[in-house]
Every structure is written in C-alpha cells, then in structure tokens.
Amino acid sequence: MRIVVAARRDTALWCEALARALPDARVHAWPDAPGEVDFAAVWKPPPELFDRVRIRRAIANLGAGADALLGVTNLPDGVPIVRLVDAGMAEQMAEYVALAVLAAYREQHRYLRQQHRGQWAQRVRLDKRAFVVGLLGLGVLGRAVAAPLAALRFPLAGWSRSARAVEGVTVHAGDSGLDAVLAQSRVLVCMLPLTPDTRGLLDRARLSRLPRGAHVVNVARGPLLVDEALIGLLDEGHLASATLDVFGEEPLPPSHRFWHHPAITLTPHVSAATLIDVSAVQLGDTLRAIVRGDRVAGLVDRQRGY
Ligand code: NDP
Ligand code: OXD
Image (tube, rainbow, N blue to C red; front, side):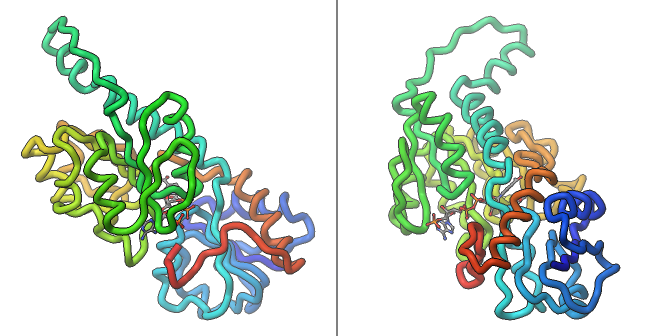
C-alpha cells in the first residue's frame, strides 16, 4: 500500500504515526510523492497534489470536518473521501462545551465583574429546568457533548438534518425545527459541518430568535456564523455572551473586533485537537478495511458536503 501525506503542518509526525499503524505501507511525505498511490492522507492539501498524483483507492481527510478538502476544485471524481470519526476529539469537545455551558448557567461572567468591583452580592440561582441548551448538530460530536450535559440534568433541544433519536435530547429537524430550538435555547452550541446549506446559518434573523440574554458557542466552523450579526446583538444586549473557537479567517486577524469584545471569550481552534497517534491508528484500520472492500465509518457524501 502506498500513501502520500500532505498535512499542512506536522507532516513528518503523521508519516511516522501512519508508518507505525501500517507497517507494510510505503508512506511518502508530500511533495516527495510517486505518480500513483493508493491513498492520500491530507489536511487542506495543495491542489497541485491532485494534478501530480493519481489516487487509486481513497482520500483520507486528517480532520473531522471535510469542508476545506471539498473546496479543492480539482479533487479527482469518483475517489471516496473518508474523514476522522471522533479519534479522541469528542471527549475534548464535551469538556470545552460543558465548561462554556456551566460558565453561562452559573453566571461566571457576572460574578467576575462583581469581583473586579469588590462587590459581594449573591444572585438568585437560575432555574435549571428552564435553562435549555440547544445543540445544532447531533453527529459524533453533538452526541458526545449531549451526554455530560444530560447527566447534569440540563434540558437539551437538538437539531439535525434527519430527526435521529438521541438519549436525553428533544430532537428537531427542518426549518421549523431550527426555529423551535432557537426560541428556547439559553445556550446555543453550534456543532454543524460547514456546507452550502449551513454557511451563514447563524445570521441576524436567526440569532435574534434566541431568548434575550442567551449565550452562543461556536466550535464548528467560523463561516457558519455571521460575525457582524453576533457583535450587533451582543452590543444591543440581546445576547449575553459568546464563546468562539473557530473563525472565518484563522488565525483571527489582530484587528478583528472579536479579540477585545468584553462579552466574547475566544480560543485559537483548540476545542478538540487532532491527536495524531490516535488518528493514525483509526486511519490504519480504515485504509485496511477499504483494501478488503469492507464498509467503513466516516465516508464523506460529496453531495451533502459532510
Ligand atoms: P458529523 O457528520 O458526525 O455530524 C454532523 C451533524 O450535523 C449531524 O447530526 C448532521 O445531521 C448535522 N447536519 C449537517 N447538515 C445539516 C443541516 N443542513 N441541517 C441540520 N443538521 C445538519 O460531524 P462531527 O460531529 O464529527 O463534526 C461536526 C463538525 O465539527 C465538523 O464538520 C467540523 O467542522 C467541526 N469540528 C471542529 C473541531 C474544532 O476543533 N473546533 C474539531 C472537530 C470537528 P444528520 O445526523 O441528520 O446527518
Ligand atoms: C477538524 C478540526 O475538523 O480540527 O478535525 O477542526
């Protein structure tokens, strides 16, 4: 089996980890690649790779979200694309979102402001039964995030394309389903893939449907959210806070208003780091299964965009 790896960064580490996971494979680090390989393992690959190298069996996306790969205009037709499925990211995402939800519910921001003013004031506790957490996306990450929140007894309202059953979550689908989730979410967590259907989904009209004082968490992709709409609604006091891990442009430009907005907490795309060793083991199993002709998890549907 021959594999070419183009990972944007850490290509050498990916090559070593894949060689450990697939001891019989010949692993090439782009741009040192033969004219034909069985697999390409890539993250935001240079389009030139697809002009120079024929890929016989599949392209493996070295991340969970395949939006950047699907945006490459010269992707070879008919070659299956597989993505990482969890690979250690789901637990990290559950931690990150639980932290944001608990900070919102326990009014961490208000107590911090009080502390800075030297003010001792006990606020009336929020009623958890009315503190609905809205989960946009109930895939691998959405379901992992739901579990600890359900255990903490937050009411959960979820939204997915298909109305799938998820324990502890009242599931909605379709446009009316999205409206129902927005109308009740005190914290809205976005875990949708970036596709033609979801780009710009969280615009001013939709964010305005959140209850006054709601919090927004975006851990999926920046372009799902319209930046100016979020800032406008925070400035007007309709929204209380936002926790953002992903941005339309990364690194976030120094002049972007998000950096210094008092109601925004931001992190540099770290909510769920890609764990190279765990991911390489998963990829090893997936590539071997493809060679055997078995069904594999994580096949990307190019039409749907995820
Ligand atoms: P999945 O494919 O497992 O889940 C996607 C979910 O979104 C599914 O529930 C799907 O519905 C739903 N969905 C997709 N399109 C629509 C739509 N048009 N309307 C309603 N629901 C829709 O993906 P993952 O959970 O593994 O990952 C989600 C995203 O998280 C990734 O695409 C990536 O962009 C991002 N991510 C971010 C990371 C970070 O560090 N910040 C790390 C890892 C991922 P259905 O169930 O019906 O198919
Ligand atoms: C991913 C990511 O999609 O790191 O895996 O964002």
